[in-house]
Structure formats: C-alpha cells, structure tokens
Image 1 (cartoon, rainbow, N blue to C red):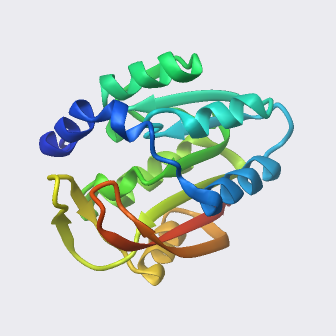
Image 2 (image 1 turned 90 degrees about the vertical axis):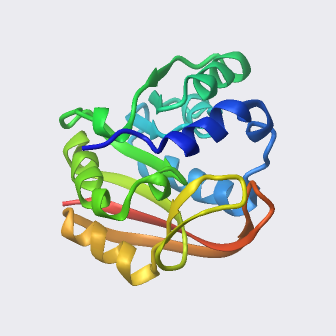
Length: 199
C-alpha cells in the first residue's frame, strides 16, 4: 500500500483556500440533494475526501450524522473554519469502518488514487456501508493516468469501467449523471456522478 501522491497533496496543501472558493455547480448540487434524499432521515454519512467540506456541511445541515475525512490537513482546517466541521485527517487506506454508514459521498477524490488501488478502496467503502447503503462516486472520464497542468495525478475511467469496478466491489449502480466540466486547473473535462447501492 502507498499513501497519497505527494505532489497532488502538495497542490491541495498550497491552494486549499483557493480550492474552497470553487462553486461545484448545479449538477453536483442536485446529485448531492438526491443522495441525501435516498438516505434514512438522521442516518450516518461519510464524506470521503471531503476537501473544503461543502458536501459534508450540506449533509449535516440536512440532519445527517456526518463523518468528514481528507488526507490534506490544510483542507481540514478550511472545512473547520468555513463550516465548523471536524475532519479526520487520513488517506483512503485509513478507511477501516465496518457497517458504520448509510451513505458514502466520494466526490472527485478516488480519481487521485492509482488505478490498481481502486478495487481495494471500493471494497473498503463496501465494508464501511450498512446493507442497502449507498455510495456516490464522481470521477473524470477518460483513459490512462496523467498529471494535470498544476501537478495533480489523475486516474481517468470510462463509464463502463467505473460501473464494472463498482459491480465487482458488490455494488449495484442506480443513478448516473454525466456532464462537461472545467477542472481547477482550467482544463475542460467530462465527468461522471455514479450512485450505487450496496448489496
């Protein structure tokens, strides 16, 4: 096992405040609203790779019991200062919960993991969810692995690849949304939001 990519983490550490100013868009907000609505009232949710905390804050404000987790201490501080969140600082490999959550929100975080590690991380998410729990995974569409213009490492997936990875980890895909977007580095991209249910 390896920890977070050092160069990617350094970018987020240096630019956490700038990143927190991004508006994630109407599609991301609508997917989050639907995700919250699919969870039991007052249920438990994990925001994995929570970044500056907008998703965790929205889930908390909707009445969910939220755990927020991110590998970047600077992002954790931004989430605390902006939203009053307590963030567990840890990587995907620190995800060791067992049947603790009704939902896991993994928005544009797993795309920074090596492709070979994705099955392991999705299996850990499966273990962290209660039976019938849901995960939402957002990724950039494409193939291969590459760094963007500011140095972040990306693993790109196709729609079918992501659905296959989720299926192999024990999830049944339920809802899918794709849209054109623009990355933090200003580069156009296509993204996918895929919500799946734990068997």
